[in-house]
Amino acid sequence: MLITGPRWGGAPGAPAEGEILPRFSMRSLGKGKIALADSAPDDPYEWANDSVLLVSHRYDLVRFWNSGAAGSFCAISPDRRRSVAHLLFYAGRGPDSVAVRIAGRYRAVRASTIDQPELALVDTQRGADAVEVHLPPVAQYVALELEVA
Amino acid sequence: MRIHTRRECLWKTAAAVSGGYLAGCFPGRAAVAPATPVAVGQSKTYEPAEVLPVLQKMFDQLGGLGKLVKGKTVAIKINLTGGPAFRLGHLPQEDTHYTHPHVITAAVHLLGKAGASRIRILESPWATTDPLEECLLQANWEPRDIVNAAPKVEFENTNYLGMGKNYSRLAVPSGGLVYPAFDLNHSYQDCDVFVSIAKLKEHVTAGVTLSMKNCFGITPCTIYGAGAGSDAPSKRPSGGRDPLHYGSRQPSRSSPAEKDPHSPRQDTWRVPRIVTDLVAARPVHLAIVDGIKTMTGGEGPWVRADLKPVAPGVLVAGLNPVSTDAVAMAVMGFDPMASRGTPPFESCDSTLELAEAAGLGTRDLKRIAVLGTPIAQAKFDFAAIRQKRRAAPRPFWPWQ
Image (cartoon, rainbow over all chains, first blue to last red; front, side):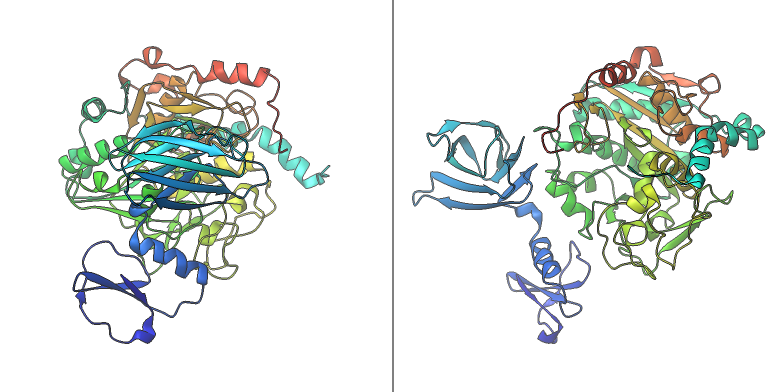
């Protein structure tokens, strides 16, 4: 998807059908789409948020609950059998009852923290297209090692 | 310590007797407030195979939905209170404080089956203009399940102008207790039938939150929120509805102001009255209360109390929101005739009492035909849990 503003001028392609996001006109071109903003972006936060919405939260790789401000970085091994998700919580004290959904089919998840670096199995709920990890009380950093199903 | 002015003290005293005052003002209105049947059903789980037939039977007991919705545009206000990133423990929101998607899906399916020509799912999610579907996805829901439950199902985020060209002004026919009229997202006017699907919960400010209190969320924060524009609605909502709760400021000047800006600024006085005004301005034709799984102690996981997930396994539905909420309160073990000072209204006014006094419906169980499961059989005793919780020492909150 190409996301652009009105300075682009007339966008090629045909009007796209489907879900509509206010402030944008969608066009189909080849295998992709062009999202043309109706007006020039004046708010960087809104522009970044709209970019996520245009792709849709449906495709979120990582989704948090009860995390407060958090960040994540995911990596996958060359043989694609293992993943690591690094989770960082920015609050002064670690959050309680954090749940993390990681897209993909995984059969086991182990967690490692700075205080307890040895990997330990954590409570998970497996879905068709994601695994939800229920973390115990943690401090600012957790690494999750995920074993592909 | 905050010093109360003489005016506030006078209002506080007035608030304490306000229910009686209102009833006294309109002695005939409570007696003639509409009385319609309310159906109660039991479902132990949210499995569609269990929920759908229970809801179908309840709608049949109410006389069927056909005559209400055939060929009509139906708007459904669901309850997604708080942001999608809040959970009670690790539990999904729909098991504690959101109306469950399977109840919404079942209702949508049955409304479609009864002939609704268009069904619109509405909510004003926390401080965002994101499409409602995106908020559902963040809560781990699949909006397509709801869309596919009937023909022509749509979503709209009503916390701002949304898809409309202008806000719609809905007047309170009696003149209103706090506001004479509200400027709302067009969806609340552009519908023939309005449905409130709420969760069976206690509420810190209003005692209980059921089908009427659910309507507090129809107000757009671009006009009524903390970050509303002062002259005109803001483009985007920011913050919550503190101005409605505490009267800390007036709505955007382009919208009707409070009738009396010197009235009490206490949320326990204001919220029940504003909800009554909203239900009068935007009448509810079908009220559904989801109490299959819910929580005790408050309306969401942010409440500082001993919150517990519970599974009453009950659904309540009716064609009048006051009567439906009265039956739901009775199912919770509370007396729907309770006034301020009596649980669950220890420190607030009763929305049910105010709504009854405004002629919106009766809360008197003697006048309401309860169909399906008897109240005694469906009862899940929130009142006893509340009494025990309030008698216990307050939990320690390390961040206080």
